Length: 248
Length: 288
Image 1: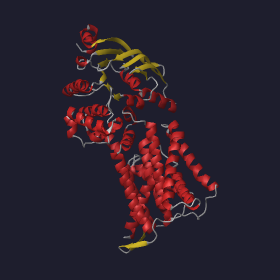
Image 2 (image 1 turned 30 degrees about the vertical axis):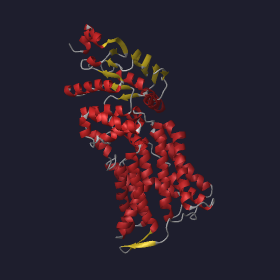
Image 3 (image 1 turned 135 degrees about the vertical axis):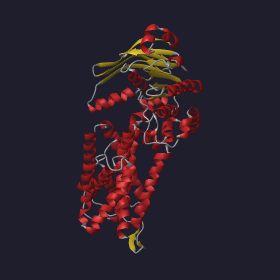
């Protein structure tokens, strides 16, 4: 599905992602775990192409120098230089950290904006699906995005990404700031999405414990480097990982 | 009674002038200082097509609007896309283009009071004892129609919704597959077409003069600053506030002070509440 080799990102002289190679097969859920500033979000920006937009804007402003080396193959094609909206058209959809809901639009409108790439039938079908996944959203249809709680916003962000008809869904810290019970809901939904829609998912998180049971394969990032990788269960039983990422 | 009617007409005229400016700013954060120039451009273009090429009036208007939209799109693609995000450069570039267009017309000999567009319908009616000509009624009708059409466009169509997304969070919209440069170009095209539309609706009330370009720009900025930059609802309310303030000034103080009202409104707003009186966005951000 997607294969990213030797990714390197520098912000000025600081290395944010160091020589990471990452792989996600069709229908797999891949986890990327790491502490703050380990490079998780930057990695997501590289995969979704947003980094190219950041790079361009910074260069125009004369701001930070962003250097990116990437070789990404997706569905047999080299997409390293593709713009973010073109990658989205190919089915790579990023559900960003901190959710980035459109605050002035209603829940329904957020979802409709998400359906920019979908055909009319797809949009209608996906809307029903999103509401069946998150009945809460159906109830709050007309509420402004900015007035939703964190958990509701996260549901909306995931729903909005689904509306864009992803083939590869990138979830950047979907559990950030959520109550444990809502975290559980989100995890369950991620699993359901994979089952129902045959979507490959790459999910990042700081705290691995709630996510690791559902991932097929996982990477652990530290200071931008992938220090460890392996099948979900293997990693769970590794004593080093246990100490560092499970809080045992 | 007169003040009420002419206040409403004046307010809607202001809203028409400001709509394109606030739309472009709201979507792509580009303060389009060429807005006034596009207004005059559309006016003169209509006049040229009407009088030099001899095409019928509605066709002339349509052609002028299409040309304005295309000119806006070309400016966006050729200039603005390259400097987006650098506010000072955007102001300087658009203002320079605006001055170039306006002074270009002056250089080509379009000066004086001889250029007028005919009204859509001649004549006037008495409403509650106040004589109002048909063109002014058209201003109200078309102004409301344009507002309604825009509202529907941004709520019901795919492109309109995409523009709303870009306006609120450019990068989040990008992640959903919306091309922000394309959206900015579309926004600029629509914004410039709106400037042109305001021109063909409002110019039959007077002469087409170069100076109108600068005045319209100041009115548009006044409305947008008072209403909160990029906020449509705010812009409409602000046009009514400034519109009535102007009419009252004309009625009770001096007609020459119209422009002073607009400039004063900018000044007072910037001193008291720089984010504008009716901008909702800021409020929301504070709550969340």
